Amino acid sequence: MTATRRGFLKLSLLSSIASAFAASSKTAFARAEKINKPVVISTWEHGLAANKAAWDVLKKNGRALDAVEQGVRVPEADPLVRTVGLGGYPDSECNVTLDACIMDENMNCGSVAYLQDILHPISVARKVMEDTPHVMLVGAGAKKFALEQGFAQQNLLTEQSKQDWLAWRHSGQQKKQINIENHDTIGMLALDASGNLSGACTTSGAAFKLPGRVGDSPIIGAGLYVDNEVGAATATGMGELMMKTVGCHLVVELMRQGASPQEACQKAVERIATRLDNFAEFQVGFLALNKAGEYGAYCIQPGFNYAVKDSRGEQLIDGKNLLGEGA
Image (tube, rainbow, N blue to C red):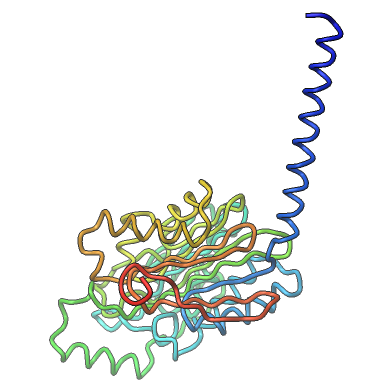
């Protein structure tokens, strides 16, 4: 091959590389122009009030981690939200026990489980993340840590929750804990103005559960997962099903492979339906958000909804489902 020929091919190759780089840069720029940020999404109708608190942080260019913590503290403190925090349904011995976890853009995470007498388990979880070398504290140890950190002790059992427990105990349904579909976790995901993701998940768990039962909500990868390169996911419903499939990690990995948030949530639900024979007896809902600010959700049964708030406003959206109307 002559020097002239080699030079021509080299020039052509360099030109092709330059053109490809320019095209990819243009595409990346166009995609960046379309990024929906900041944005916050959360499970269920009580996510509307939670999103407002999170938006107060995000609209001031605040960090997504601060937004999700402040957001889910709202239902934690609301006795009318019967499945989270104060006034949450108790276990079979009439004790309110709380689970929560939080995860930031750097894969730092903190979690508490079977926590009693502390109003804001999500903030305790953040303290575990930031002030200890651990990821999870449980039970008496979690409570001791919270008190040492300055959290106040208070009775979380409201009169209404106590009356509900008494009615349940007298109904003869003591052996049906696992099938009670009345535990609506709040999971929240946020993308801030800097393009960073964080998530939080908090619940009082399944109503009238066996003492000591812990669901997916405080389990990183099951009830919540954040990967700042890809996206984030959270879940609601019967936690045992998410734990068996490490559902939220699955959703994020599906997004990594190219699925949209909506597609990833659907594929994760279909994985549960394929692997678990009794899936139709329960509700499971996944909610996901990617780095472009795109979101989606999918569930087993109809009835799951999620709240969204961004610069365009707020809305409550019915999640698409595997069974029932709109399937």
